[in-house]
Amino acid sequence: MNTNEISNKLYLPAAVVLAGLFIAGAVFWNGSHPVAGTPTPGAGTAPAVDIKDVTIAGEPFIGDPNAPVTLAEWSDYQCPFCKQFEVATLPQIIKDYVNEGKVKVVFKDFNFLGPNSMVDAEYARAVWALYPDKFLDWRTAFYNDQPQENSLDASANLAWLLKTTGSVPGIDVNSVKAAVAANKSAYDAAINADRAEGQKFGINATPSFIIGTQLIQGAYPYANFKAAIDAALAK
Image 1 (cartoon, rainbow, N blue to C red):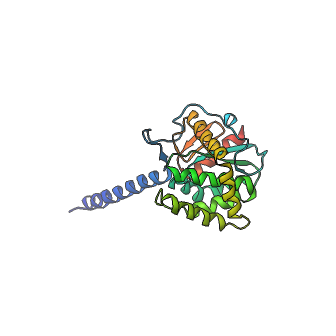
Image 2: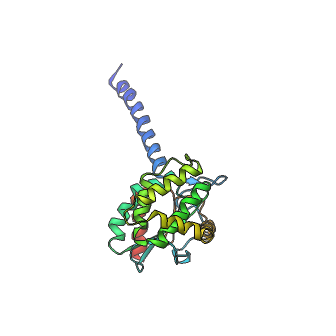
Image 3: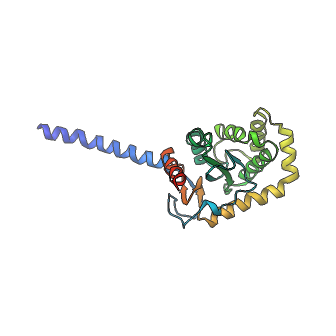
């Protein structure tokens, strides 16, 4: 066996491994939870969008209300890819843009993964109504300990949700529970309106985002969001 033959035999397995890692990385970072019966989503596959057309009033948000750029996120609390974004990417966006007064992040609901998704979102709405300054803390606690998608029955999910809500300093879980009971119809209407609005923009998966005139569907890496935010800031 000559030197070239040895090199080729070594090169081919290495190339296969590298290709596999590349594909795996693409799957990880382009992760999203598509609605049943819709094509697998990606960036830029939907009709033209504009953040100016997104309903912002009354929605949970973090950042300067008058920040020059708004990032709107549609998510389902049962979605593991939403956790991926919230844990891996959102903190960097907060550090580089939200804390600098450049970006406001608006949280919108796109519930489609079952009854637990609706209950989770109702509690999120109640936390926002009662403790807006604790909303990010609550959301962080939720996603950091998010159960596997629909792995809990309704009773177990509620018990976990109450425990998680009560673990956030400054939040009284009984007040949140009472707010959900008193305002369930209003919360459900707002949650359903968010999903209908998202569908109007061509959103068919979670997490999905509108930044400026760009639609991103999937838990892409920070660099993708940075590029979209910087483009919006430059306008």
